[in-house]
Amino acid sequence: MKPDSRFLRQDKDFWAHVRIISQSVGYTDKKTKQVHIPTLAAAKAGLEKIGMSIARIFDPQTEQLTSFGEALFAYFQYRASALNTSVEPHLMTLEQARTTFAELRSRLHPTCPLPMNKQKGDKKDVAFFTGIINMLIEANAAGFPVDYDPQALTSVTSPAKTPLRTLARRVDGAFPRVIDPIAVWEIKEYYYTTTFGSRVADGSMKHCWMAWNWKNCARLPVLISNTISWWMTTSLGGIVGARTCAVSWICSIWDMWTKCSSAQKLSNGFRLLWQSG
Image 1 (cartoon, rainbow, N blue to C red):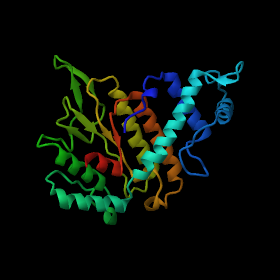
Image 2: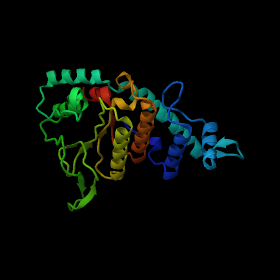
Image 3: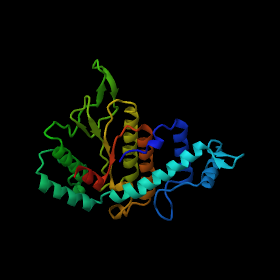
Image 4: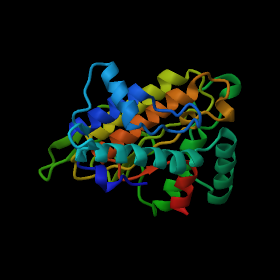
């Protein structure tokens, strides 16, 4: 998926409104359990409750939305539509990931790393989504080297080979290497996770910080994000409040992705399989 060009050049004020209104009115529609689309009335009430004004959004003289307000509510519509119709249906459950992993392993006969997850006891298993990504990358890399587990920070250099951008944390993968990569990727995989909130929050913030670091960089990375935890399904049915927490964080990632336009593609679950097929 690629960001909507209408929202790639918005200023910081725009994203400040997106975040504070989203927080004020809520990210999730309580009836549908889908990403919420704020109304003008709800945005007004939410901002006034915390002592803020809708002056940039609404013109009281014309009783119409300003051009800024029109763009803002168009973004809310776009974000909800994209996440509700293009993202959520393509997130894989644990069993779907397990089945897909087994099918690809049988068909591709990979030599790439297929790491285990970090769980213990009965929950210790293959990191299915990471394995799926590694196998698909190997199958399409045409023999070029791939760093499936970088042990160093990623840097992009200037023509004089001086550091131009260096990420603060290691990425989950780089092609072909971490120095001057063509692509880097982040994998969000939380199957079996029970400490839901902090894990997803940490992963989301890492993703957002990484996107900000790469803003305006000549070589743009590909970030792949997916986790069943973003939307509460049967495998996470026992986690109270998981859906509400998850939707807020996936909205935050979507906002940062659009704002920075650093990630050329945002892929998830089965969509990743379709793109590779």
